[in-house]
Amino acid sequence: MSTNLDPTNPYPMNNTVLVTGSSRGIGKAIALYLAERGYDLVLHCRSRRAEAEAACAEISQMGRQARILQFDIGNRSECAEVLSADVEAHGAYYGVVCNAGISADNAFPALTGEDWDSVIRTNLDGFYNVLQPLVMPMVRRRKPGRIVTLSSVSGLIGNRGQVNYSRPKPASSARPKPSLWNWPSAKSRSIAWRRA
Image 1 (tube, rainbow, N blue to C red):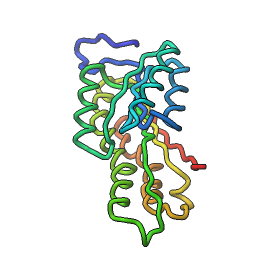
Image 2 (spheres, one colour):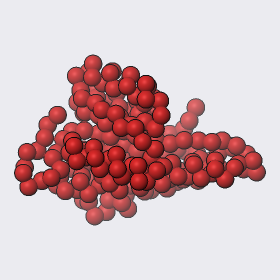
Image 3 (spheres, rainbow, N blue to C red):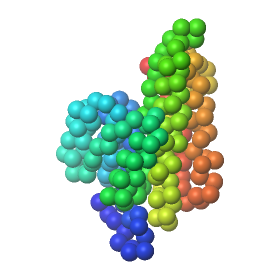
Image 4 (tube, rainbow, N blue to C red):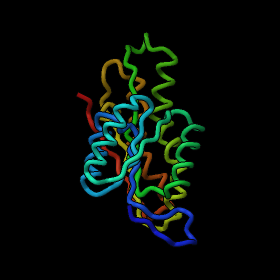
């Protein structure tokens, strides 16, 4: 891992990328892709720790460094505590991939308040909860960085039984750019995908 040893910068530069929801599926594929291209990884899981450890081992076998953070992106105080401690210990990230999300599919009349709240809290609020403690350390590096958010075409066309899942998705596509207007060296990107 390369670091910037400038003593005036409390957030040393490194080539580490946080990928939320990276214990399996798309998040794991993104993490492995980045490791193949020379990045060190901070893997994230809310549960499924064993799967995150298996992904971590795969990345280590590629010769890259990886560590695991376990927290719920829907829990603002937990995000702030875990991510701030990691930045303090290891330095600011080069990039963040906001991939984690959940679904709780049901027809709208049968959708419970908890199903609505948990999906919105994770898929919409999780963006703020993850990035808010990370952006200023990234800015203070005075180096380029990357923030990528994943979305879904469900936000454009909808899917049967996914009203709670589809509601935050249009915001997923738009949210990185306004967040970064005051950070000219940053690059942001949203990617829409369709679940099979």
